Amino acid sequence: MPGYFFDSSALAKHYHVEVGTAEVDRILQLPGARHFIARLALVEIRSVFAGKVRTGVIIEDDFRLLRRRFLADVTARRLQVVRLTNASSESQEGSSSNTRPTAVCAPLMPSI
Image (cartoon, rainbow, N blue to C red):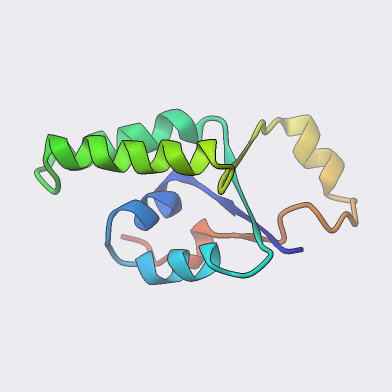
């Protein structure tokens, strides 16, 4: 079962259409794939959405809607929240586990 790790920048593309949204959505729809986010993303994604309000890309009502959609995905476990530590990343380097993420979404996205 493939796994994908999303950083906050890549994940935000699922909630607000921008360059890279189609690729993120394609990955999120892969049958049997697991989708991981760091615990820190729970805070960072709100900051990404708030930045869009500050820059006038979205309005506050949109911010609240995006936040609710994100939290619904976390609650429904469509996104699995994981705690990342130096020790866990070092221990997985030599691991052959099929459940560890096999791709990182963020580098697949064009820089903006």
